[in-house]
Length: 464
Image (tube, rainbow, N blue to C red; front, side, top):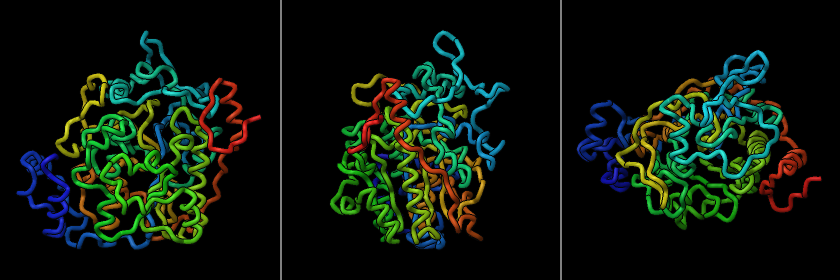
């Protein structure tokens, strides 16, 4: 959508209650919109109302926490067996009579490699992998049979309740999405760009220099919030440019936006003081608590527990909605093939610097399933969503909440995730008792026993 600029889009949004004038769209977009009857970029969720109009008064604080690099099966594959409230309701792993998964992928020699329990919370460095080519090889034209060929047997490992007690406890109470997909068969940066801007802008790799060279032509969700006077903060560890997801789009690194960046410790104190803004985005520490390899996954579990508990103990709890998701699958196995998706714009995939030629594919297919939790007093208890959604569905929820103009065809037409809520009566007016995150000592010992040394927070005592 190179010829549909951010300025023209935002300018058009002020006309006709936020709808882009049809003639202002480039030729390809006019044809696409006419042939599919889709909502257009720049249009409003509620076109009869002014942009910036509040539509969900019971939710006053929207929080998004995006973790890293795990598929649905890798994290939640056994929830349907291990949590009483989810028995038989979750499309995860299939267990045989012997209690072990029957899910498998062939290796290069055709031998079956079955899904297997992770024997510790440790992860190896660099494997599995989720590059554009590896993801498309794993997808295998819809068979989801190429994970082992792309990354080796480690792709078939998965974590269970023993390793992730807090995560499983969260899934036992609050709603989860089992048809929630990452936005593209690619790495972190392209997928996070979809959440922020409704498009990858052609990006196919996690490369900061290339990402900075590709602006979000039609702006970001942060632009929209700022334009319509909706306050927001980004809570991220220092150093900011090494951690803040804002930094993957250079145009977001402005003095005004940097002034909105606070620390994760500030998030907890703002929760305690009842001082959260209407919108908050959280970053984990990408060195040791994002759950990406080679990290000890339980460090990420501890971080997530801290965020959730801070919200549940806050005086703001009665008006909070937290979306907890993962940016992409990290190369780990999932058995559900990602379906076709709405092409966000007309920007083609761009190879990374020095990367091999890209495998065939585009931005018209979702990536693999990833975990999605919705935590709110108004969340529907014991709910499992079967509606196809992706990261731009979170974007669409934000747009619907404040009636903001869409950025691309993808976020304009994404499901806005309203199915996770029941505003007639709060099911969780009193927050449920959740399991504690595991202590780190045993996990660190297990990592050390395997010859692995995951990065640890400063000041962490050595495991004995």
